[in-house]
Amino acid sequence: MGSLKKSMAAKKSKSAKTHEPVVQNRKARHDYVITDTLECGMKLTGTEVKSIRNGQISLGEGYVHASVEPPSLMLHGVHISEYPPAGAATQHEPTRTRALLAHKREIKKLVVQSRERGRSIVPLKVYFVEGRIKMLIGLGTGKRKYDKRQALKARDAQRDMDSARARSRRG
Image (cartoon, rainbow, N blue to C red; front, side):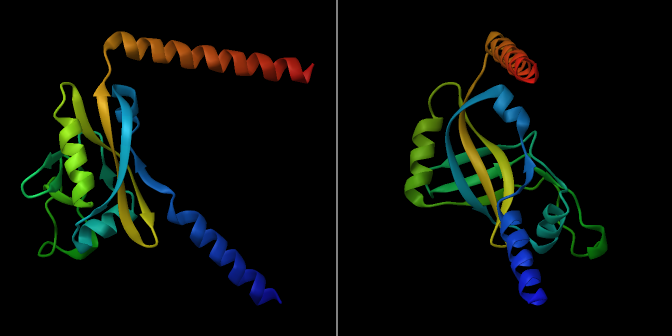
């Protein structure tokens, strides 16, 4: 009976960790209004996968370039640190261009939408799904400075209202 509980607990914790983000790009949501998202696979080497499992990835400076012929998504500017236990001979280049994997029709749709003025494709988060690394990319429109200030004001106002509600409930 005890082993059944342990195995069920192990399954729960394993399934709970599958969609947990390894890294999120919070700056992207601050700098862009994200209108559309797409989950993509990533073409990586073994040492890159090990580094991502350790959380050694930075999405802050990253962007995605989409092309029609051949239909492809290329990830630029994302830094994945080297994996020291692998040794010097098998290391990867930290900021190399990486291919993202998606269906042709989705890529073509992104190409058309990203050609509009002020639209960019940015990486939002990296996470695991059943042991495979996935990246959520978003099609965003750049925010102006006043848009960012308005968003901060709205967030502060919401926080103040929530705290006032909590105080009124307590008595």
